[in-house]
Image (cartoon, rainbow, N blue to C red; front, side, top):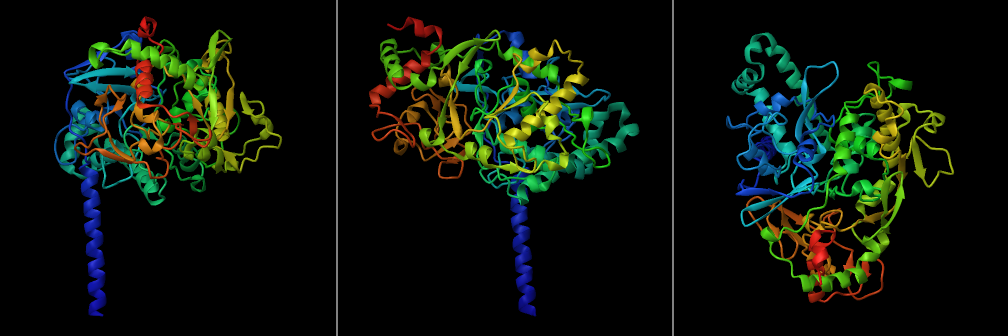
Amino acid sequence: MRIFSRVLLLIAALLVLILAVVLYYVVNPKLPDYVPVKHVHFQDQWSAADRQTYYFTPQGTQVKGLRYEWFTALELPFSEQRFAAPEYLARFGFLVEPGQRATPSNPGNLPVGFTRHQNPGSNDEFLDITCAACHTGELRFNGQALRVDGGAAQHVLPSSVPTLRGGSFGQALVASLASTYYNPWKFKRFAHSVLGDQYDAQYDQLRKDFKTSLDTFLKVAWNDTHRGLYPTEEGPGRTDAFGRIANASFGDAISPDNYRIANAPVDYPQLWDMWRFDWVQWNGSAQQPMARNIGEALGVGATLAFFDSAGQPLKGDARYPSSVRVRDLNLIEETLQRLKPPTWPEQLFGAVDKPLAAQGRALFSENCAVCHVPSVTQENGRPVQHLKMLPVDVIGTDPGTANNIADHRYDLSALQWDTSELAQLNVELHPTPTEPLDLSTLSVAKGLAYVTAFVGEHAYRAAGVTPEERPRLDGYGLPIGVREQRAYKARPLAGVWATPPFLHNGSVPTIYQLLSPQDERSRTFYKGTFDYDPRHLGYRTEAFKNAFLFDTAITGNHNSGHEFRAGKRGNGVIGRALAPQERWALLEYLKVLGGPLEQQLP
């Protein structure tokens, strides 16, 4: 009996030790140091007014009910330093400028893409993380920074799952929220900051509302952790977009039976020229801009109600209320139509070797143009680029994203949709189904298409969108098209030098490696830096303090495919082997492709 008690005591002690270690890293996330740059350079991609519209126009996301003023008043768990201080949030990879100050459009002095909105009939201002947070990049070299509007972010945003690796914004935010609520001195300071002279009158309500938001964060963290929903750590600059949207929309909001393992993170794609594409998303699965943007807003935290207060599915015009702001989404979309690709900054990254770039131009025509130079047609006043889709067994890149989207099925029968009613929605399935839809086994793409159609209809009515306005807000009158191909799209490459890392899953750090056989690519490398390598065209990959180690052996992280090497075409081999000098020539040409310097080549 005494031995048994000692064993139990030992087990309990080990569990306490493990919990203490985990909690330590939760409240002390391992973050890179913040090293401010001397200057941030902005290119003539668009106007300064367009840039501010893009950075701070809300889209209707609500971060688990977190109010804007709460976020700006939070402290770190073990100090009185503000959680939302620019120099602290920059350590997660969010973009700030040295010495930045609050402005009317950014009163909280927050990073790019952090804004606020009020819902109709409410005085609460919610923290709204908009698309600019994930689709704005930066490249740093010799203490200078080049801002890449519409580029790929490198932050660690989505996960709240506690890990010893740390470094996640969501994980750190939950720690600050919990320490604020459960530390009475912290909460008192917090309440005084938020309430001011209304401290006595509104303290109890604030504490109640704050606890509701904290409980939502903790519920999500527990759910994601104990179900093991996200086994492949996303790390800087990635998220499993479709997996997270599906788990939120179909799992959280409908039934736990709809949770699916999301183990195929993708990079945030660049946004310039996307309004010209015939199909978007890495796998070319979406067509209409508004539906795509509603889905993105839902994935980042816009509210969505499928059921009434009695738990019954909403019907008719009651489907589906949300916090999505369709007029603001349209404003962002139309602003992005004016965004130009970045141009190689010779004054920052060095002069272009024009004779070598001219050699690269011929190599590009021989080896790259067949996939990356799409045909163009004029449709409804839009120059439409018809992007080439490459089947997974041809391009050979990690199949996880395409396979998960094609294979995962969800039971939406609890919503009690009438299939004849679905047929009246502006949804077009490609190819047209030959069998009736089975609502108990819908794919994520089809399910989201119908959900976004209902959400859009409701939001259009709430926003007073007229029938005459609707084609413009939809985006060139396009339907909500859906495709499910086991394939990835090849997009045009103007400005590609500014979008590391490469492949859809960010598994290849530089363009030089992308042009090399797989056995010459890094099997592991470090991510989380903005330091640019202007020779190899990518981020630097050496170790630094609290860097994220990217391992290409992990599911979803494979760096296979898109290989130029000897061998039979297909299964990842897309072209002949390129000699090192040919790769350098191609890199030199990619610096100028689509920009003014291309016209100066001999």
